Image (cartoon, rainbow, N blue to C red; front, side, top):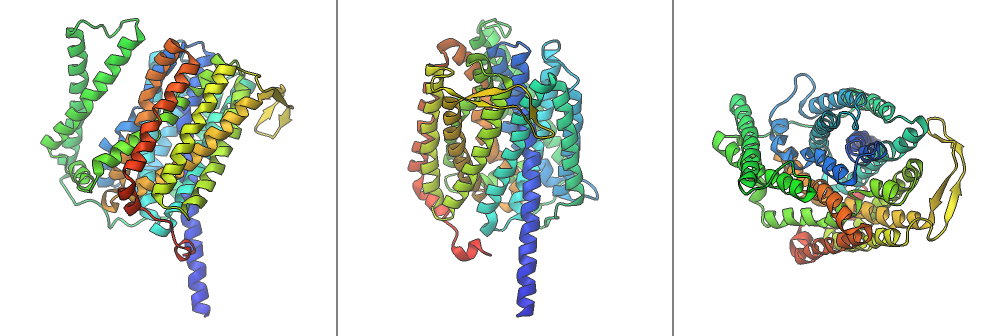
Length: 513
């Protein structure tokens, strides 16, 4: 009995340690996202950058959609002394801290190109950190803990976004300084690197990909990069031959160039990597596509969050410039309160998933996400103050204070509640789907591939959203976001059999293991 009690206590301690590591790493993973997304959009908006250009700035997130191309190197190579997963965690987090500090010294109004390059570098490192965090979580958690682990990850990820995407707006308004905000975020990332170095548990390297010639791996990666450059040049020159000008003032023409360049770069990069013998990438992709329905699952992953991506792509400029809310009001309502509601939705989703199969969860949550987009349409149609407002008095919470009272619009709060609760529920099911599709031997590359496809909507709709919202107006734009959410729900229903085979609710015994 005593021995059994000791073993049980050891099992509980081990699970607590694992989930604590997932918590901190989820926070580190979520912190940079808003700093190249919604927080950066707020900085650009208050600096007077036009809406269409802000939309194009969304393309700095492109590394999130291409990260599976260099993920094999993070599966194949191991930094010295620290281990494969922990080594990449420390390196990417320290580099992120340094680049955020550099970004804090730049101005988007006076040096937009240099600012965009710095933001692109931050996104590249953030995507690289996501690769190893996702792989680490997949390697660390046993199957029985994946649902709970997904909830903990989403909780921590959203908690970080409260800081970088919500409290940062309050600080920016209070300090009148976005550079100071980014400097603080840089220091926090260095703290995350210290935790990764000293406290995260090691994971086994038994599932490391087959050994291959390191020089050939690096040559394959270089060939892949050459393919990216070649695709960019070929697509650009083809459009020029057709009489189009990349510097045309027409934003639709600029958008066509960007999308054509990306569409040509990806297949050429894959072809070059195959010819050069980039074996870790080739083996890992081959192992994924050997699964039944692999292509259909990728399409589902792209479509499932597409409606949410359109509705949320320019939320901050919409609320600040379109609706006339203050930065502090947006920070409190859309980011602080909203993200706490997302966390609530994630926990509700996690509880529901212990009783519902993966298929039913995805279908139910997908319908809720679609319906929630009607709220933004109503807000754009009725305008600020349609349902009245509640006053928020001045407060001082130490590191966060608001000395000028702000009003929070009831309609805004209702819209934010619906969108964030449903989005949090959908994200938990989505993360569980991605983990279920991974092969542990290539977990970094597989999860990077799947999550990269998941980011396609969030990244590539941004320039289209900027141009489209300027062309048709906000109410029609949000109606469009509802329409594009329908195919994702249909795909879940259409793939109900493979989804039912992929995941089922955990039993009570498994949940308590």
